[in-house]
Image (cartoon, rainbow, N blue to C red; front, side, top):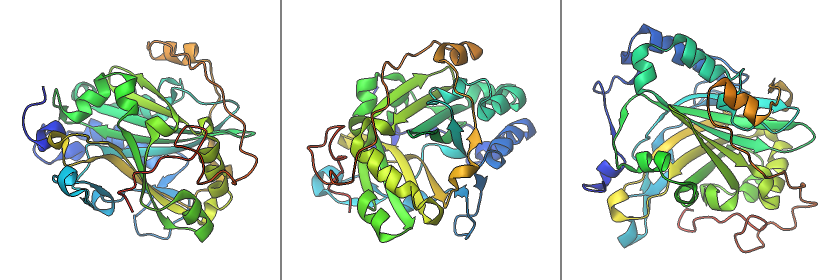
Length: 326
């Protein structure tokens, strides 16, 4: 199912022209609006000076592999996204929050199940990216994206959803862009740096009937953990754009398009919403989903940042960065 151009490899076939979510009826608008406006992080304007919020940066702000990348090795502004930002949750808990979409109190699935129309239930697909932050109190930054368009069989997005974890790990990428922050954060985290999260960190992929959740264990890399805790020390002064994408590795998969992108603006640690951690078997049963046992535990926080820039790209060394992205 790999026939056709690069555009088709990424194809998300429109259901009703370019109307998107807003053209699908009052019920669908209601559940989407509730998710976007709810949560501990408020939805703010992209260029506003608002603090403790999230916004939707355009795809063109990120450099990605264009149609001639494998011949010229030159990246170009990304041309679009495969999914739309739905909302962001900043959560704290008494334990690591795994499989948040199956949590009995997950507000996104509650809104979807209670207020989405029958048509929306059939056509909508949700992706949740759960960045798990270890510490004395566990935190999670959860980014929700949605598409209400048919995902073409054989497209790169379709394959990412349906193929195995080895495929996903080889493709799941993050591009960060520090919009505002002190030089020490920019130096440690890099700017416009691209990282294959599936290779740098432990990622768990949980597939439901109408969603895919990716739980990213920041604690699985001492360096990533150290960088994140450094950034959290300046969190109220930092704004960062994060774009997630499925890496294209052949000509027919080009040009790259983002899964989605979110800007996080000057969040407040203490403002995180509390969510009680529950056993995976309990949360899965709440949504009639199979239980996924992680079998992995948090690693201890690195003693210092002295390891930055060292190692060989393993999960205990530096985070591998796509050197073509500057």
